[in-house]
Length: 216
Ligand code: C5P
Image 1: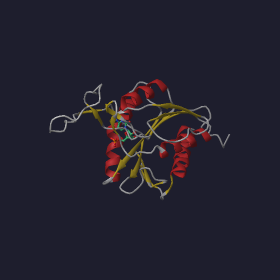
Image 2: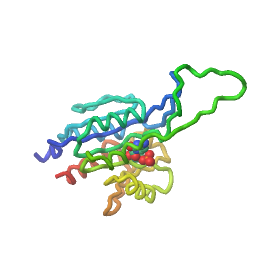
Image 3: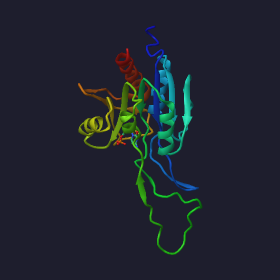
Image 4: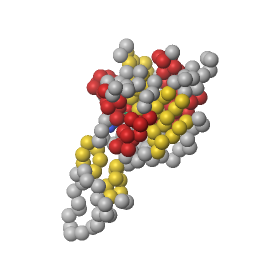
């Protein structure tokens, strides 16, 4: 029916930050609140989809009708995403840490001597790019691009480089991260569509409408 256009579809959403452990008490994180990803999961469920939401550490309630899997690190998120396949559509909203600490210290690192310890980093797996290259690639793969400059050119490049169908570009130079509103441009092969600034719930609703049209 018209009000449940995603009925029978499986939508996979990642949301939130990741926490990359350094030692038992310390981690690397970012400012993502998970609000935009949770709103997309909620809107997809409201549109009738079966929704799997793989979430990093956030303080948000699980939206009604959504299957939620909690993870901490990028590596855990990658494994949870793979385990959730197949999906008709994946929307990767999570602000995955690009790097993690190289070598986890099993004991708390102590202050000793005069020099602070050096923090060595290593690259995390790119979950979106891996999904695009996977044998189980969802029919519609949507990524996000949070940028503080050169938003559209970077988003276009990201769409091609990562093999996503669509990129939702959002300018995070203001207080978007953690805030209630978002201002996005939908970047597709056919061109760009810039949306007015609006509540993250409305961005989610509009994006889910586009997804339902595409999967119909
Ligand atoms: O490269 P960048 O982090 O800007 O790409 C953002 C997009 O890629 C988002 O959709 C994000 O969820 C996804 N991503 C990912 N795994 C990473 C890094 C980003 O899935 N390691």
